[in-house]
Image (cartoon, rainbow, N blue to C red):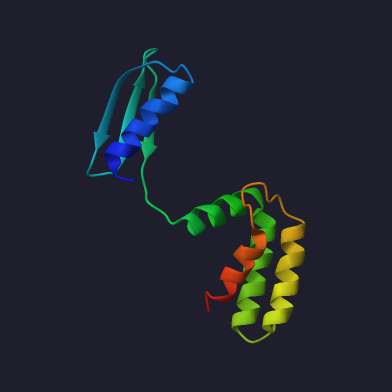
Length: 118
């Protein structure tokens, strides 16, 4: 998605929610969209490209900060040789079962991908 497509998407989102705005501008240098509402309020949308996996992990971490710390600890212990692949998988599965996973559809796929991060 390029910046023009993103700008069009933002227009669509604002229109869907009956949000009126008087100005919309894009600053290419800072990858920022500036929005001024009809009521005089100003909003800033920062555009930063991320991969789908990064976005999902970030969202999952925001919803599960304590469990993310535990998951990172398990991955670290695996990388240091403290846990086998099977042990790490078992611990990660247990951590994920206790988490708010509404942001991610296939958590087993996420665990499998973590194995490949070594």
